[in-house]
Length: 149
Image 1: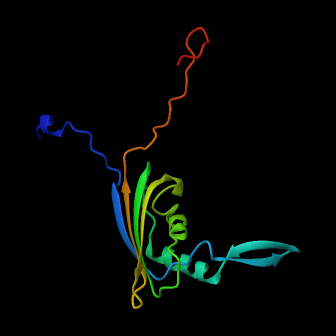
Image 2: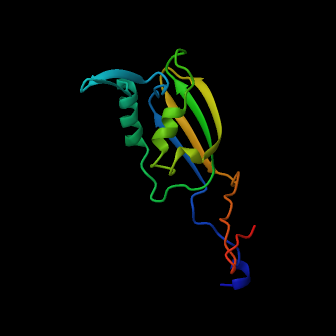
């Protein structure tokens, strides 16, 4: 092997992922119901949202190493009817812990509504992007104890 040809920084981290999840996602905004528990009212996911969550987890297996850094997500959500609102928030929540660490990593979203009565699904593409706002390095004290800028 010629060392001059192998002197680049190569990332072994996953750069992009494409996944199709079959089934119609529930709208997170409309997927809560109020139940009484121990004398108090609580909001829990609707039966449709819980069912979709189970279906989603069966189809989207967790990555061995979760994606880190800032991400772009492109979603084409195909619904079975014209009735549902375009709402990707449940999908973003479900991807958390399976594909990426936290949905706060998603800095760019492209969502498209589609109609396919015979085959409702979500076509998902997740890509790493350049860091939007790099974290500031913590200030360090110099020998005299003063913080340098």
